[in-house]
Image (cartoon, rainbow over the protein chains, first blue to last red):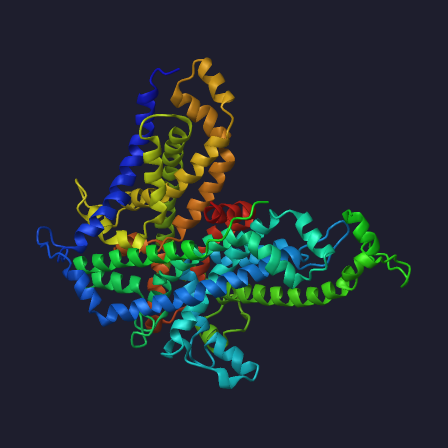
Length: 307
Length: 314
């Protein structure tokens, strides 16, 4: 049985490891290396500059501006997305009329709702960006949102949306929420389905209403999933590249109002050819992402409930 | 107190209305009374909100569909109107003039190659890591799994140069270059998922095959891989969707127009719209890019939802 075992192991692992090493692990290591140089992309011209790029980054108003927008999104988008996801999942699983033999039940057609809600998750972010670009079109007749507001007599709410400096970032954040709620509805539904029915039964017997049931039973039992979802959604909020690149006025505009870190990195590297400086942005993004993930997991930890 | 007993006293759960006063309500069950009316009100409320969200998600997508049959003028002057005449030429314009046909073929080649490659290489690595003990097993496993937490943004700059300066010839804007990169970036989750899956499969069948004289390789391809089919389907769909919709990697590594994938082509057309104004073709192009995904999602709804959320439940 042992004959040829190691040859087999090496044979099966060699190619996957090679591809993974060349295209994922080595870029990871090189990112740190490049961030310490003034590389402009031509072979042999990279000069070691120590932490100069990071010092420059620290003094860059542009980068702080972009980082600030990411932090706004990080504070808002996960809260709204997860809250809506939990709310819908609870309705779908517990909010329905009770039928024979069931203490808690989902609303009728919950499969259908999950099917529709999940849709944005499977289509390309490019398509989502193009669709919402048209919804936010500022023209009162061409723009879907503006023409809808006009039709129902809310002309006063018509706006330039993406062209309006104070609104543009929130318009893009809203698209992020729109695109991801369905994922969390399905995720939380799966988690809710594994909560034993007799816990709900006992709560109902004790006279708990749906409000209490949600905050005293469902949420505590789902806390682990909520926490993971939070980290996931936070990482998505720290990205926002495709949405901003396609939807925003002049990539990151108007007047820098929607600029985000990944867009800054992309333009610095592939438009301005300042690869060393852009790589430093990448390292800074890694630090921001890791800090966020560690803080979330640290502060959101609660005693695990076994059931 | 069993469920049936609750139902017996708590109103007409069986659908047969009973005259008031005929239900035996005991003191301890007091609070459960009246909940069916609360449930009714809540039901209307919850349905209302659910329908509203379904419209918010569904209408923009349907809008793309019906706009793909309208002329540019109709899309712009009456964005909400249904098409009066079906402008099928939008689809052929998108396919031919806007090059969506070429982008579709590019995407199909790259995604086809990388999905197959990811499945074969990913399950080979996962099988070895799940079923064999050897020095370094854990280290290699964690090396793969760690890749799930590397932010792709940080990697794109060095990755660009890895491809540009690849020994032999540059891999930028080539099918095989993109395929290799897609495989590499899909391996972390694939190895993670398939390792867990192979651990759940019974060992007895593989052992029987070995006793009958099958080699390790033969056992893997003819016994274990067929047994792992449900896992392969889930992870295959997961990779298909992710790679079909990939945007950042091709943006950076594939900057040559005749090699564009659909997402790049669409972004380019959308960004140019201000000048060229063939909105109907853009909408048809979006439908062309979405159709394969819509078909896969509609057919494998459950697997897609389970596969995509599996990562978050780990």
